[in-house]
Image 1 (spheres, helix red, strand yellow):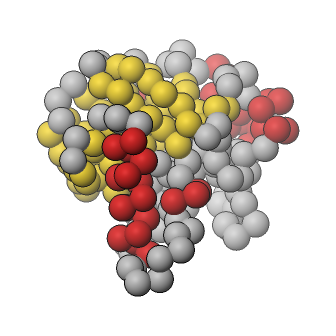
Image 2: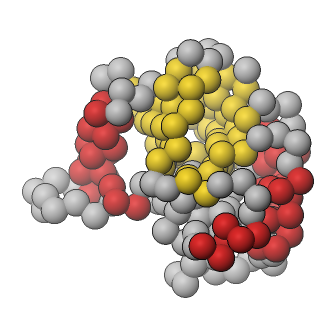
Length: 197
């Protein structure tokens, strides 16, 4: 089995299309961790910003897509996307794994000023994954990659194919297979991170 993982497309239709064509064409399922159509007030609109066409691609997908609601997703978006935008969590059981998908907005605003923000966020995500007994816990929102093992959970953030927040600005998506998770550069196809399951 193969599962494509994507997040934070923010209405950029061709970035989504490229991910599907290049990495997800033989996937059994696509998981989207939110912020599907709207670019958001702080994000630039790239030349392929076309939320209506992205909604059409999602609706016409032969591969089932499961979406967790992001902070930029609205009720209006649900009116044009035919699959449920689930909030705040989507639960999937596949490959004998409990997979939880959430956008992750609530993890980035912690109240412990003694720890760096990144560490606080990872600790919160790990605690939530543990609480939900997730084998794989997927988030989005920060437009940056996470692939870490904490206790019995793997924490995965695929980054963003449209508006990456990585220091090198590489657009990214992820694939989960029966024995491995990989994060890819959307443009050159290189594996940037991987982990055995």
